[in-house]
Length: 239
Image (tube, rainbow, N blue to C red):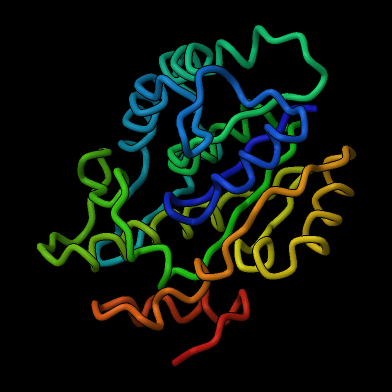
């Protein structure tokens, strides 16, 4: 089995990576405290190879259609091949990787690995943008968007871009969406879904209920009109 976890930084993907590692799934080597495969430089470079092939329509609209039919550049293949060296060379039965930047290149990852298991990790965007992440400023990854000095808005736009990118990509054969909130508040039920999907028993790791709904105590701006569709889609409560 080969598995990867996708989802924007601060969406709680470390919980899934730690669960997989504790369950005997080799998640690459070395890993950082968030369960990300290191070193990340080749993945970062791969993100910047893909970015020029996304067309910005202006505002908060991007056209991802070219990514689904064009030839994947050899440089991108080389970079991903290098980034996944420890995973590729492992002879264990169950293995995978997690790093949030996989989300930025998800359309081409799926085309390179159509047979693997994909876990799309979702978290309430209002919680997701409270903390900063390296993918907050999309221009640093070669992706144009409306310029702003508002840090929270910049994070929110990055969240929307990554959400739209995943949604615009045809579903792979093996796909499971998991809400971080369900993993924390309904861990046993959620792990049973994951076990059925992965075909292996999973370890139970400690979870922190206080990590849910942090936006309710947040004094900064954490909600934006363009979050409305995803908040409704995934059943999150509005203020």
